[in-house]
Image: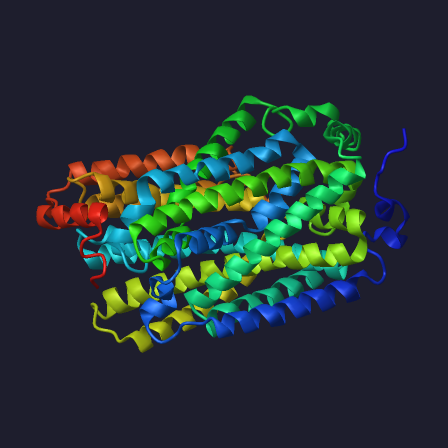
Length: 541
């Protein structure tokens, strides 16, 4: 049988996976896209007040916000990381998609409407509504900044790997420079425009992404005469694991510990979305709770179609490119989708797919940066340091300065984790979100007795335990693919700490509440309950 294994991996001089003219064409497409989207951000920017800058004045419909939500959520992990994980690990890689999608039920059923009715700009608005505001807002801001940083370094690593692939950059120093340049461009999006401009970029990016993966899927199946079974046969023959890639166990079934690691990852993915600050913040961009609920419905349907396409793309990359060639490319697993695009449509399609993938990263990082800067400016500066006495213009300026700092830190973090699978890194961010935020958010919305002590115990115990377990895990040291492979202080055996840190957060939040002498503010609790259910008073400061 003649296998359609990639000719570029076989014939290219010096092991290069791209044609000689590729970098020039890809760079031109990339530069054009950056300029166009910067213009869109500038034209759609809303910068006059904090309500405009942080929440776009609540001017988007549920359908618009739902598409923007999918654009905000479908990150480099969804497009590059999951496609690569499926190409290399098969069925186990697709489990990321299942976890990401199922997780939205928590937002749909429990959080979206109540968040929109209770807060204004940040998660801290909800958590502090019936608590002592200054310590709770400070804790919410610390949690938001930590989660955003972990999420952003995953996107930065994906951006670096993608552009390194486009420009055929192999050495670590060159890739670090690429990450730095990409980071600077990303920060410009937040500095130039606010939530409205960022949202329009996310909507445009989502539309481009859906068209791109849809066409790539159709063209890919056409390569196999629209015979899915033929595609899967080639995928198995060009993967070292053979037909095992169609069943669970390639990545997480080797031992009881890897299976436990899978359970931990699943918990993080399913519970993490309900605690992601940049997702929660999007519920404030619609005028009412009904539109917030519609946003989630639109997001779920669009993402379901997207993940079905990534399943075909992942197996198609294994069939046409071959798993060994993917792992040898700059960016490793994350290069599967761009390399497949080159096989299907040549240099031009590679440039288009890579530009869309880069747009994915741009939109997600812009949303993350805006969320982190909003949390610091609104929660810490305006309400902790200034005790609510700060004018809108100054708060927006503080948010912009914060964006610069966050951008610099994310560049350094992206360089440190360059080469790691993006979907895996995002799984860690979900573990942080579920550990630090979900328990306190659900308790605040549904437990009348919950108080300030419980809020602080829940946030800090979840955040601290998750961070400590990650530092002592094989992610950081003790294995060849660790961030620091030359040392070994891995005392915690699992690569994702969710199975331990998430229960710790729920438990400590309950203990802090039950054993505290502080009583709940029943008047504020009653007001919060009425407001979260009906929306009465939701337009108040």
